[in-house]
Amino acid sequence: MQDYKNRIVDDILEKKLKGKGAVLIQGPKWCGKTTTAEQISKSILYMAKSDEKEQNLTMAEINPSLLLQGEVPRLIDEWQIAPKLWDAIRYEIDHRNAEGQFILTGSSVPAKMDDVTHSGTGRFAWLLMRPMSLYESGESTGQVSLIDLFDGTKKIEGINNIDLEKMAYLVCRGGWPRAIFMEEEIALEQAYDYYDAVVNRDISEADGISRNPERVKNLMRSYARNMGTQASNDTLRSDMIANDSTSLDTDTVLSYVNALKKIFVVEESPAWNPNLRSKTAIRTSDTRYFIDPSIAVASLGIGPKDLINDLNTFGLLFETLCIRDLRVYAESIKGKVYHYRDANDLECDAVIHLRDGSYGLIEIKLGGDSLINEGADTLKKLESRIDITKMKNPSFLLVLTATGKYAYRREDGVYVVPIGCLKN
Image (cartoon, rainbow, N blue to C red; front, side):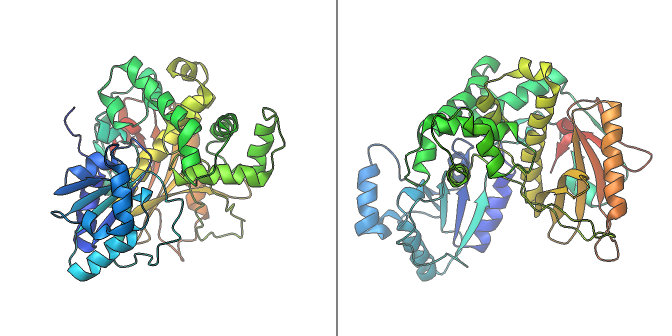
């Protein structure tokens, strides 16, 4: 077993435990939820442990409080296989009258919550955990901090150690914790194994509905082709139908997409809705992304060399990697990542919006002067349309790149930062 690599979510988990009786950590399988929770837990119940699962499920039905005994915080791993534990945990929290009692981990939203009577408000905190960012995995130097950019720093500096070939590998490998310690050839297979599990089993376990593996493959391939867009479910259906031997309606596509959301395979970006000087209509559809770019890679059946030979696909997958990292970083500073696009097709790849109303505008480019200039022009154009009498000026304008040796601030005030230099 390799040494534990610290995660940005470690501090968030510790703080949430100080304010609530229980913290629910959700996220895709294999992203490190249990390992992270184990670092702070004082006792552990593995609900799905093969030789104890049936006994645990029986006990959850007849005497759930017995499963909750142990030194706190007590980790209840894969709690969702016994949803009745939710009310039992809520009851324990109320009667113990103390914070930091339980950590729950789950790789899917429970299919059946019929027996749950309480929402958990005031007792539970929720925490979404994703695969590792480049800073967490050690590939980013972390010389440029989002916190500093929001604080108004004018000077940044950083040296990027990731070239285009290395970035292609990192996109294909993904942020799966165990893959980071593996030889490159072996590491690249991990996303394909994850994809196979989703197709053949996990998506059907999401809500107890058996699903056709070939149809799941078609959906995930179509989803990968439409990453970074606001493609409708009908668009996905039209793309899928050429490879589907039976009739396929939009409601079926929606049910498949929702199942992927329940197991945290896809995570879409909501639309950002700022106050503008003009009455330009803003598109409100969510933007399609996988929670990790390697899932799209496996869905398309490609590898690092394919990305080098197809820079358009590379650009879309790199954008997904950046959105993953920005989400990890933003949540640690109480922010969320949005996408902007208006009726005139002015588009901003990422907007990080903090609770206090501060926000930063980000364009994502593979690199090169022409693309950087294009990204900076887009950012300046969007900035000029924001009505600063009704909301703050943007804290920063940033072009986030795959390549380029240095992080720097341009004369027009736009920051250019390789993702290999960024941290929270």
